[in-house]
Amino acid sequence: MPSWPLNVDGFDHSDFSEPALSFVPSVATAAMIEVKGPMFERWKGDLLLATLRGNRMYRLRPVGDRIVYSEPMFLGERIRDLAELPDGAIVAWVDRGVLLELRPSAKLSAFNRFCSGCHQPTFGVPAGPSLVGLMGREIASVPGFRYSPALAKLNGVWDEARLMAYLRDPQKFAPGTSMVLPPLDDVLLAELIDQLKG
Ligand code: HEC
Image (tube, rainbow, N blue to C red; front, top):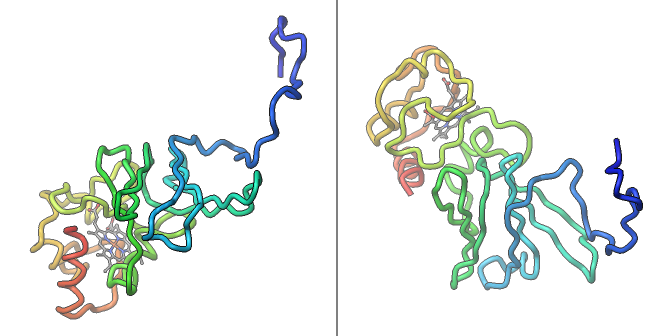
């Protein structure tokens, strides 16, 4: 790499403190907060890092001046800023201009049991498009996601009736869609739709 001719010290960084942690390649840090509130008891004192690459937030555990642990968490969005609410919930402000509210779930929700594996995986490339802000959104409209021609050709926005029909029988709603689901009963469907509205 060529050096700036007036930079006589070259790459000597001895005037600086060593980093506690460095990401190579960069994760494009946008913000960092410390978890202080009562809601995420096991995260207390940890640092949450908002990033603009990889649609991830990181949880870092500092011990002294070292970071001993870094956990990437897939949120499916580029994250601009983070804040902790007075009750301890974490809010993330994402690129699309919406706020995501993060709270620990008491039980494994229907969404976590049946959908998050494809739509919100903890690591790896998701098999399905992000479902954040689904209601009222154009069908098959997440930029960059490769939808099947069957779903891509449908017009209209997602509402309760369309979602119910798609989840009850994906192939009937959009013959040829690449989403595969087990049969879901009415109680589960109602719970899922409630969650996706929220
Ligand atoms: C095995 C992986 C998988 C599972 C499990 C799964 N999905 Fe999907 N989902 C997909 C794929 C792939 C697509 C894109 C389908 C297409 O292009 O035809 C999709 C698309 C969707 C869409 C359309 C989104 C849009 O942008 O128009 C909705 C809504 C949806 N899924 C809801 C759910 C719900 C709710 C669950 C849980 C009950 C679920 N999915 C479970 C893979 C999955």
